[in-house]
Length: 228
Image 1 (cartoon, rainbow, N blue to C red):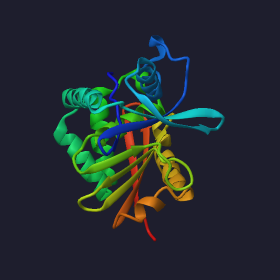
Image 2: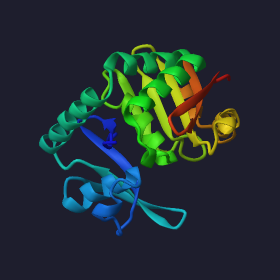
Image 3: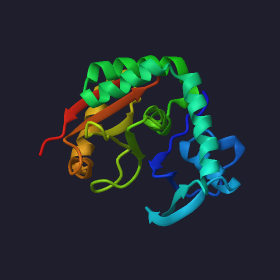
Image 4: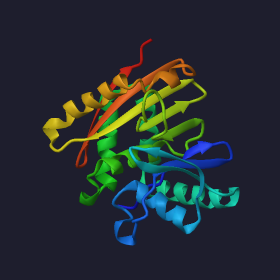
């Protein structure tokens, strides 16, 4: 399964927050999504904006050094996404998320996973990167991954600016199909407990909270509208 990179739009540049790891090698490159960004950082394709500490580990906020490098990677990401994913289905997933249609999200994401995921990808970081990649680069949608909102860092925060709709998405891995519903509910509970939707609520007329649980090539979604 090729890796689908995701970045957050920030004006003329894209950026990504990642935990620093000096032990990345070609053998571990695709074990975790963060390893991909560390390789680009070590190779000089990304530059450091700021650094902080999180749970004792250095956290880097990385960005492309100039517009030319950004455009090369933007074209590459678009090419990968167009080649791997049916765009009509991706658009349907996005619409279903903003509408809070749990059944349709579950069905469409499971359909996409069947076509692109492999046995070696059954890890929570992959599912997170996969879902974030569906929103990345979409016109009129601003997406952030693992950036601080509320009390900690939600997996994915997205905003459809034209309609002033927001999304908070939390992803969970389920060890067995029977655990999918509990894991999706736990993801929703975390969104509530850590107030992930507080910032989006200040800008958006509505915020949809989505808990996604994944087991191999299956997905179960639980949605709930943010209330005041």
